[in-house]
Amino acid sequence: MSRVVKMNILEQKMLSNPEAAEILRGLVERIKSREGNVSPLLAKTLNYLEKHSKLRGGESAQSVRMFLKGLGFKDETIVMILNICPKTIEELRILLDYEERYVEENVLKETLEYLKNVCS
Image (cartoon, rainbow, N blue to C red; front, top):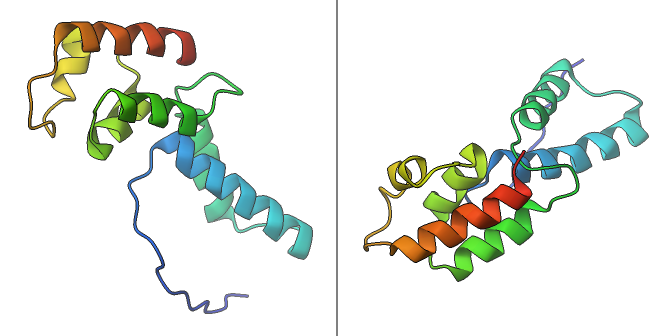
C-alpha cells in the first residue's frame, strides 16, 4: 500500500554515490526496524549505489571530501572525483571542467596519490 509523505527541503547538497549510499543505508535500516521491509525501489537504489561506489570498504566519503576540499576543489568536482576515482592525471583533468582556475600538476599528483589509497 502506498502512502503520501510530505517533506520540506531543509538543505540542498551535491552528493556522490558513496555519500548517497551512506544516507540511504541509514534510512533503509530505520524503515526495516519500523516496518520490517523496504520498498523494492529503495532496495534497488541502495544496491546500485553500493555496487557503484569506488571507495574501499570502511573509507569515509566525508574524509575524502574534506581532503579534496582542502586542496581547493569545488563541490561539483569533488562529487565527480568520488564517483569515478580517476587513476591518471589525464582522467583527473577531464573532471576539472567546473574549476575556474588552473590546477597545478603537484596538486593533481597529490590527489591521485591519495585516491590510490582510498579507491578500489
